[in-house]
Amino acid sequence: MPKAIRVVLADDHALVREGTRRILEQHGDLQVVGEAGDGEEAVALVERLRPDVAVVDIAMPRLNGIEATRRIKAISPATSVLILSAYDDDQYVFALLEAGAAGYVLKDVPGQEVVEAVRSVNAGEAVLHPVIARKVLRRFTAAGEGGDRPSTAPLSQREQEVLRLAAQGMANKNIARHLSLSVRTVQVHLSHIFDKLGVASRTEAVIHGLRMGWLRLEDLS
Picture 1 (spheres, one colour):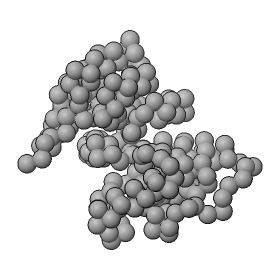
Picture 2 (cartoon, one colour):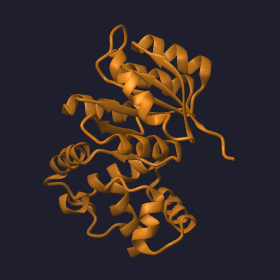
Picture 3 (spheres, rainbow, N blue to C red):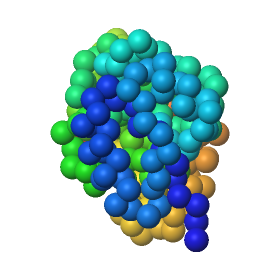
Picture 4 (cartoon, rainbow, N blue to C red):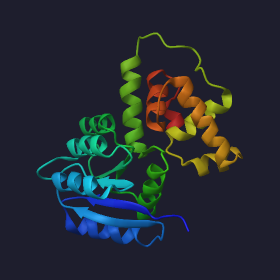
């Protein structure tokens, strides 16, 4: 039996942590190994427990989610950080992605989406709530206006299809189902995309595609 995904929860509201723990631990492949009520405690827990995933809120006392994410990635690069927050302000979104967050989910999503987001970031996949994805799109669309862009991406047609679906936040298994491919083939396509674009993650690949104008608003619908 595969090992359970070990999770640390960081939120200053005990009720939110309790509810999130209950949702996650309904699934045998997820195990909450620690809870933190502030950012400094979250960093200390990650340093001690080395979880697979840290689910982090933004507005926490002592150390906010942005700085907590930055420190978590510095002390435990293998820990994937999933932001679970009520805030979608641009200043938070871009600061957290820059700090190394692998995913950003808003608290208005159903519990099952949080479960899938934890699994996805643990598998090395990017998870961006559609609202967050659109913010990223607008930022890079605006930044690139008037600039020179290549007319085509240095990707094959299939790789462009995979990148567009990744930009929608689809997990590898869902991309595979959508394109009638094996999960392994999707992983190979993503690896080729990373190599061609000179990036190391899905989030970076999607942001690169947005910056270069290869992805459009309708691609994230």
